[in-house]
Image 1: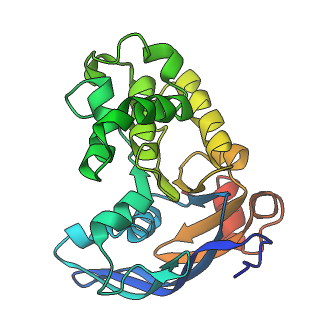
Image 2: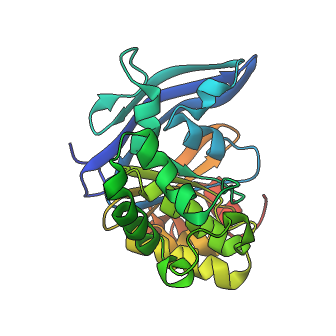
Image 3: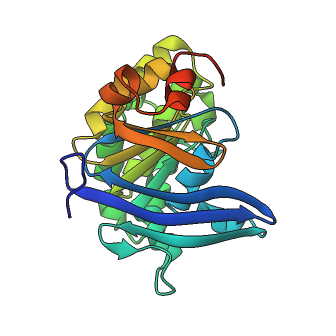
Length: 256
């Protein structure tokens, strides 16, 4: 299956609606997200970006008042099918949150935790941890202190540890929910470089309030407004010649 943006589609969303109780938070969202690319979700606070992101690994299932209609297919499989193992889904579709959330344990145990839960052999764990920390651009900084507490790392290091923890279980898709909003500019730059490197092997969807960040890291951008996906296209086109006036107004800072 190909998207209209030229790459094979990894995530196909059709007519997605979501309610929190009586609040209709997402309205008929349809989007084809290409494989091995970075798709940015932009829009003002409360417009549905993070809600949409959490639909892609069924994190919204944890909210009792939440109801969803529509289809979400990842690699051709309907993730809202009754036959889906949600634990396995969240292994395939990893998530990195706004604030770094390392477990209160060692750096090594943070990264090995997921593989152990999913049945990795003990003899394989050292290699898995090293590979994940290298992929997370953290190995050089922590290789000599793997048994130190993860909570002793700086904020930027903790976020890269959370990325390494996600990579350790070999996902297909990585969701980033404003991963740099709590970080300083240098740490932000390291995370952005890492995202550009990771897209060679993963499909990435990132929520960001930072227009410059969306322009720097993403191949495609979707603009959300009050629960609607207003516009979706190549990032260059969205930023330089948006089709919708509300997209242009947001990007140029007229509102939001």
